[in-house]
Image (cartoon, rainbow, N blue to C red; front, side, top):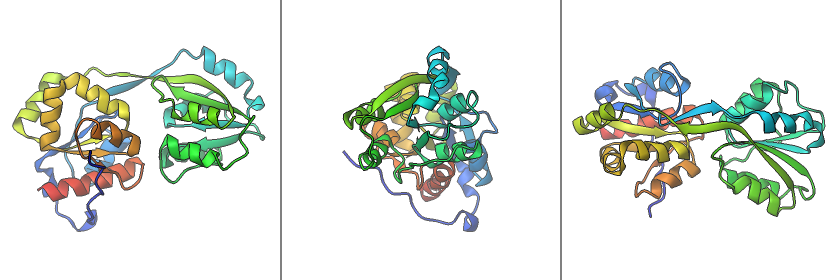
Length: 267
């Protein structure tokens, strides 16, 4: 199976706005003026929202119980900004002894904005890279809190457990299918009006295919470029026979710029 391709090069400042000929789909859960949509429009792109997933509050009981004893943990691991929000809304200042690990620049940025310094941030924005960094640390016997999505993959918890850490994983938020106007989406696919589809999580890939149906999903990505924010998301597309473009950085800004350049090359 092909690996994700590298993003094409180009300078958004020097390019014309004829990229508006086809729209870019945003599949992440955000409003019309959300961060990814806004950045894409600032680059001169037409944007349509097809939210494949929604983020909902989890039953906070387990999270709040863990946070009551947060000072007993040696590490806390964040794999998304939603987990950061769930924790920092309840604990505004981290205990002095607590060290913080993050997956992805976007997650680290939100932590920084909320006054939580980050001790570990792998260059590659994926769970396996984080576990590899922990393998170089004296992690055995240490207690790790992992506030996670309801759909969290086992990579972090299992990987750290294998390294000898005592991992407490609690659900911090829920990732659920979103209600999508499937008829409108299929109509746009039939018209060939989509130039690129952005995916900011593996769940977005899974749920967009489920909502549209495999036939419509395949037709969509036969005529539009799939752009993935990171390797884990890209793998879901590769597993479906697609060759996605990988964002130049695992941030919404990187996703927007790479999408712009990808659409440019298709005009």
